[in-house]
Image 1 (cartoon, one colour):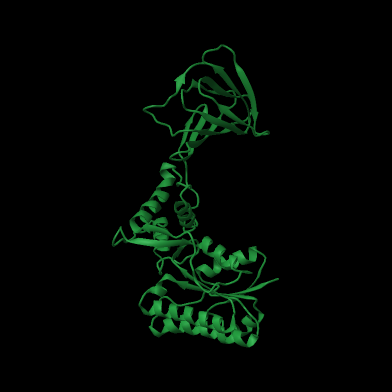
Image 2 (cartoon, one colour):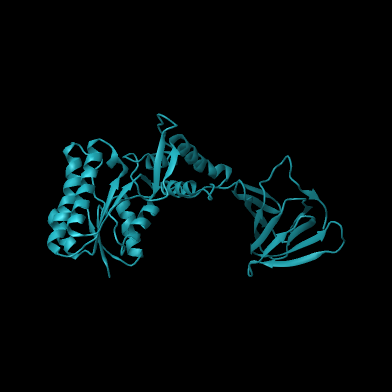
Length: 367
């Protein structure tokens, strides 16, 4: 089993990478700030591949940039040399390596010393310059605006935006982890690597999306999951929910027949609702011009009846929670659903459009 040494294993990227490597069947050797330099030497002796994530981005003193980013990288090289074997090294650098500040300089120095080591020894190295990273397990109110916004909005706290038009280059944690792992067993080409896709999003747009996610518990609209960034940001947002607020109530429209409850709405995929009918109750007896539905009885027993509005012939389908079967409700057919069992009948109902009280496209007609 290949052994992967991950430095900075307790950090944001490190924790995600550890789990993924284990899931892929690799043995993981962890190194973090609780370990000593002597520990690092012994761990490198065991390793078949080094993923070097450890670094400093918010030090108390400027010199800590160079100690945590450049010096640590050099120590790894110094420990690899006596091994007399090629141990591929992957460095997690930053787009700030192209910026003229102490953080950027220290990252650039780490990159350069790795590339020089590779040229001298032909030891494979992979250097990634990462954009701003977002995803689960990133520490809020530290150095990630996405984590901070997600946490604060999910917890009902205010956020601060100095300029809504500030554009952020963002990369998702799972894309990073997958790209890192893809380097195992591959040849290095000696060039700077980037993780794709990089999403360039304005700060104000991020905030608007996060507030939309928060409000979705009231208006029931789910995110646009065809948009890669929105899909990943929603997953990230959910990871910051307070542990006592994973659940939220739905508005049940209750009467003596049972209840009808809207569950999920979408902009372009209609909505899903839950219908509960008491024994002996008949619901429906209406038809539609364009609106169409799918009924799925998941508990209880019933009959769904249809009649073409131009015909007197009645069509019946027996439905039951014991045999899950979807029934399409075509346009032009008046229809009803009757609970013929002894218990409540629960039906999941999908409709191709959001209910519009001003244009319901629903016309009463007995089956």
